[in-house]
Image (tube, rainbow, N blue to C red):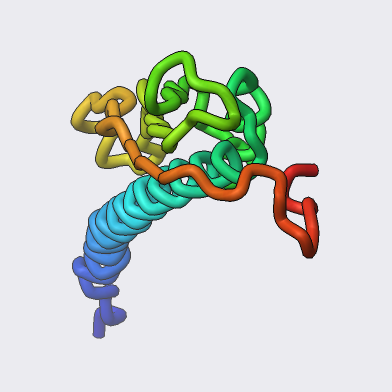
Length: 147
């Protein structure tokens, strides 16, 4: 009597599992990367709003570098902003508001799907907000926001 041979398909399950796991992980990482992009989009909107608020409250009519630092605390990828006071050339007594715009914000994919498709950094749209002038350093309770 001959000994029973192993089934020729004993390794097929491991190979199928490896292939399915590879596809599953690729899509899972793609979903996570898309979620990161949505988070970056939301953070850019919030950073724009927070930067404009800082500018109108703290009277930084000539110092956009300080506004950029406040925005980079929320989203470090921000490199380029445009801070425009309305009307142009106004001072603390004549400014009516500020328009703040983030430009040239790139999103870098990290998932394998982007590598397969050879996707480079994606240029996000510009984010912009307008706020009217507030009391500009005249908060009787605190000036903590301007520190």
